[in-house]
Amino acid sequence: MSRLEWQLATVAAVLPETPRVKTFLLNLPSWTPHRAGQHYTLRLTAPDGYQAQRSYSIASAPEQTGQIALTVELIDEGEVSGYLFEGIAPGDQLEVRGPIGGYFVWEATPQAGPLLLVAGGSGVVPLMAMLRHRQRAGVHNPTVLLYSVRTPEDVIYGPELHAMASADSSFTLLLTFTRQAPAGWAGYQRRLDAALLAEVVSRFPTPPQCFICGPNGLVESAATGLVAQGVPAGAIRTERFGPSGS
Amino acid sequence: MQNPFFNRGFQRKRPASTHVLPPGQYETQDFPVLSAGPTPRVATAKWSFGLDGLVTTPQQWSWAEFNALPQQDFTVDIHCVTQWSKFDTRWQGVSLDTLLNLAGPAPEARYVLVHCYGGYTTNLPLADLTGGKAFIGLLYDGNPLPPDHGGPARLVVPHLYFWKSAKWVQRLELLAEDTPGFWERAGYSMYGDPWKEQRYLDDDEDLAAGTR
Image 1 (tube, rainbow over the protein chains, first blue to last red):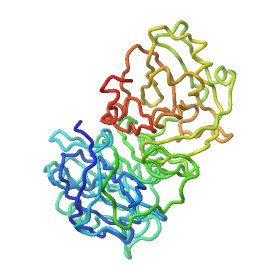
Image 2 (image 1 turned 60 degrees about the horizontal axis):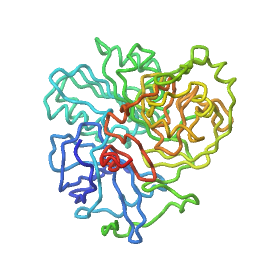
Image 3 (image 1 turned 135 degrees about the vertical axis):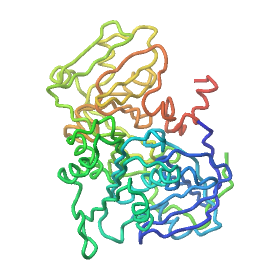
Image 4 (image 1 turned 120 degrees about the vertical axis):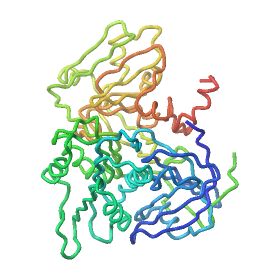
């Protein structure tokens, strides 16, 4: 593992993704290839020395050298996300260190088996890194992204995901809208319940490797549901945010 | 070391914590859940907990036997490596001193590898489990510990980052050598002192220098 030093990244671009989500494209003076699914820690320092740090998943593929994309959701009262949304423009500098995390990662190899990615809200970010890595590596293992969002305007990376699905028959995008679906929508319009997970798992001839990322409640029900569908617990990797539902 | 860099216009927005926070941490009132895989559901009827390895008398308890051991209340602060800290959490459980006294650690036992239902492991020095510093938590805030927080029983070692406080604990194995567990093999600190901000293996400088 290379040294995890803090480094001063330069903001190359700020890309709005949804009304509450932005991607910050950072040029790194000391870029090291990450593994898809890893994160960076970002540290803000006030003039009086006060510091706050938060971890953000990398959205870009490791094939995109020299820079990383961090996709950030604006959190209510969020000290770090609030500053990033209001105070950061191209050319500004941000202190980061990484890449971090050695378990919630996926490698695009020619031997890669079937892959099921399950996302809730901004939990799609590390899964997007896996999909971009898969695309850049030219791997065509059977892959499904099951992506739960509240409303159409909450879909992060929508155009890119749709383009990926149309260009690659081995990749299927399954959106489910839990609050409001687009007009004329014929797909899923509910939470990730047992029947929905059973349908998705049945698309695979053999149990897929699963990565689930999102709010704890969603991850908990998806992971439990997949185990109930016969996916071995050891084939399910999770990353959660937020408090327990109880 | 003073950091000369600062972010223009950035200032503290959260009210300053009334507690002293370890470096890089913020206070939360929530109890976030983090885990690497599905939540193991362990029925108390099938639960057992053991203490073995370099001990005089290996121990194994059923749920009923374990709950019959002397229990204490603990109010502790917890610090997660993902930057949140939660103060004054209230637990009830069995002190590791009680358990270790029954097993009798061998003189050469210096480290512990914690094994859990679901396959999770973590490592820490034996000295960090003694002297009232650690317990097996059975109740949280007066209620049985929920599965997503590690129930039925969780190791709690509040002075280290919370991934050392293994959920769904099944067995403690006393060893002569420090053996990396699940996150430690994935690049996280072998020790995890929040006050020294030992988050990652690279932060274990005193370990590398052999001074600890």
